[in-house]
Length: 463
Image 1: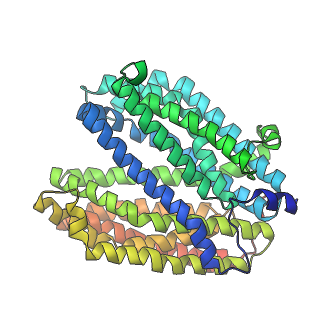
Image 2: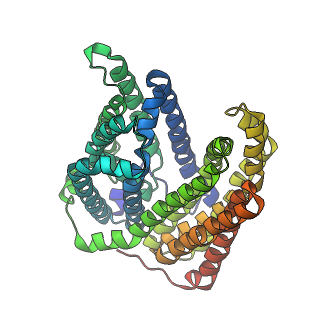
């Protein structure tokens, strides 16, 4: 079995005792961060294209469905997260059949969920959009766009699952290539449908929806051939196809390890909506400043989140090998990299904050508000990065309940109440202060649980 994995893992990264651990982290991190940058850039490009070619009305129709779509995706993200832990442990133990069994069950469950949503979501989508107070002048287009997107959910789920679980075997390059293909195909197809190239019908706002369906379907097929060509551990070969069934024992493990992560993603998204509610009360200038700073935050968060994922992957592989002694070194390396990479980014943004914000904001008053937000909050994303390493390592062992609970408690029990309370005492700056307070509390809670409880346990494989 070891030789089988060795011959198929050209794209994978795993801990090599002869190589410094920080180098292994960097090899894994570079394509992962490139993937995240590509995602951010593609979102910006698509927004510009839709806005320029179809106008603000179309942009609003597309944006209104996003909270519902994100809610649906959050559970699949959790499922993929749980699967990557189980796959990492099986891969670390050189059990390729087990790797494919986890992948098969995960894909089967996600496809079943996607089909159910595609079949039953359409009749209720307009009611859901109205519940979110969709503007009357975009409701018809928004409903049509949403219904088309719902039909693509099964393929979208397969795309998300595959690009998540490949990281479980230490492969961060394939998700980058897949996203690159999907974005290029989607953008070309969207413009073709908007313009009516090659005799295609001009489809207006739903052009983006049909382009999304086509691009995800094309990319999933491309990934299948690419992984087979690379003889990848997760290639859809005969062995994996035979595993496309529901293994109830594995399904329970996926739920236990993955669903808490999905719930956390969803609740954090809801907390951002609560913060947006507070910010909107200070007028459009504050809202614009918040939107601009979110972009800056995204780029600073890239290494913070990516290093945490790397720690989780390498931790799962170490547990699979039965090498518990490696866990402390993985944690220490991840924390050191956070100080070097995320810390350096934080310092750069602090040094050039107003210039960076000026790229997207022309009103000096709004720049002042945004700069104040950056000054108050940015340093705390380094603390957030430390949290991501600790939670990533703990989740690699299947310990998800307490890391998830402590994170949710910090966001909903600290950030949102502090932001609300201080906003009524000192104004808009009080909203921003909620972020660093919550992240410091979160770090204290996670570090305490890690040191007092988790670190003292011997962690065995889940499968």
